[in-house]
Amino acid sequence: MVAMVSAMTTAEAAPSAWDDSRDPGPPVAVSATLRVNGTEHVLDIDTRSTLVDVLRDRLGITGPKKGCDRGECGACTVHADGRPVLACMTLAVRAAGRDIRTVEGLADGGALSRVQQAFIDHDAFQCGFCTPGQLMSAVACVEGGHAGSEDEIREFMSGNICRCSAYPQIVAAIADAAGQGS
Image (cartoon, rainbow, N blue to C red; front, side, top):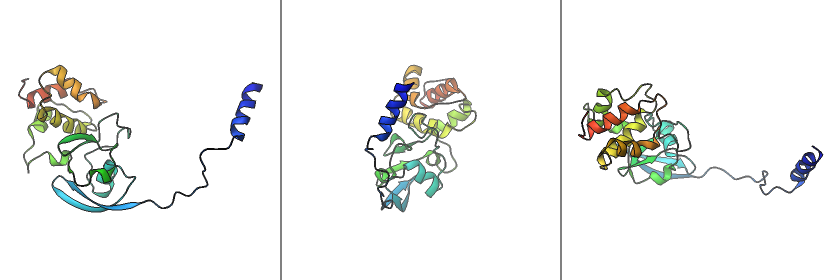
């Protein structure tokens, strides 16, 4: 016990590499154009803001969810230039000039996309929290040709967590949307 107290006292007495008294200054904002679901938005964006925060808090696009805020659950998945990205791990300024598509942009007018319809047909959601991210990843899975088998679908979708465990229905919906049956 004495050695432990002594070590703590020494560590606390050592000079800190991090100087908390240094003022980092005001946040830096830049003007950027975000093209989301076909609509351009010119915004002053704090360079530290994530895409999910700007979509939800500044643009009112609430489909992408803040689940883990660490890129582990997939609830914030959106498409940037047709590729799935985790909006909680993407700085909003890095999305400027790209075509961003969220779950709100999947339907064509009043007609659901084939993936959305397959999710309904197969009851591939329960609480619905993960559904927007699941749908965006499922669309990328189908459009990218990664739905050749149930194992391939599971591997592609492995970055999306469903706390209700609707995985069998999600796989069936993706296979159906890809024309693989069931």
